[in-house]
Image 1 (tube, helix red, strand yellow):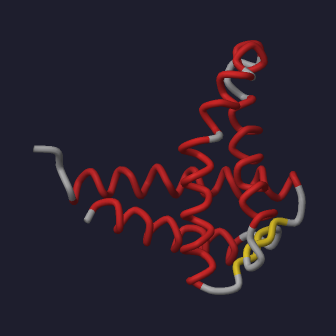
Image 2 (tube, helix red, strand yellow):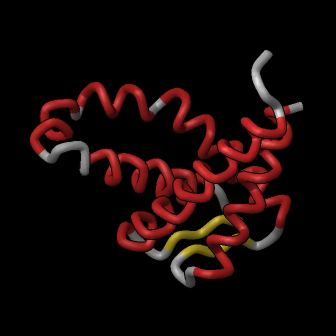
Length: 117
């Protein structure tokens, strides 16, 4: 149940990002559901490999390079999907930052709703 709630709220967060930032466009809530799923898959499988491969750069930048990796995942998802568009890398960076902040808020809310037992 928690996973479905996170998926629905992540899709809603993506729609919210598209509403407040003009560099990100989502055509419908269904497209946002698919985009949230694809972003989740990329973050689950591709992001750890990129983090490991770019570890020296990440350490030298004091972790700031992780923002670039998040933006790349966001941008890559937009390039794969038809109904989810990002204007460019700068828009992907800003959009992924907003989406990440909303993701933290969603995670905190879900931890209160579904406490570990």
